[in-house]
Image (cartoon, rainbow, N blue to C red; front, side, top):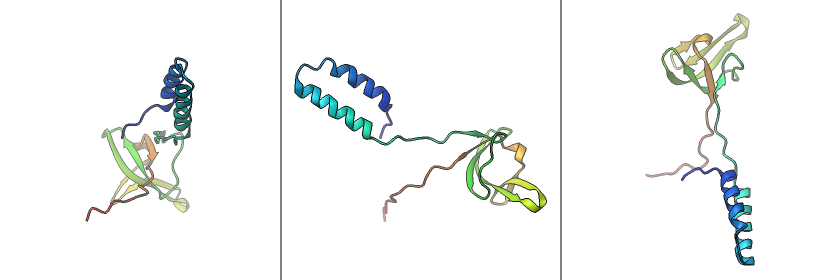
Length: 116
């Protein structure tokens, strides 16, 4: 499946519909524009600067470690009584200032295929 820019496609089809000669062609173009307009919008998570905002605690996210040019999965671990926050990943931990950006994980698939 290819993702397309529906807004750009609508512009191209709308300009083509001006060239339509018959009512049937105009109707078809109108239906295509309507179908495009009804399609869901897919949003992709964006990197968030860690100094601007941190994620909820104990929720796994992707983190970027600029020192290693590495993307990892980790959760923000907090102990309020000790005023402690750090990124935890299995047995590893990263200090807050080691992570420059983070982003939420995408939603898991709604349908899982059973190949067995």
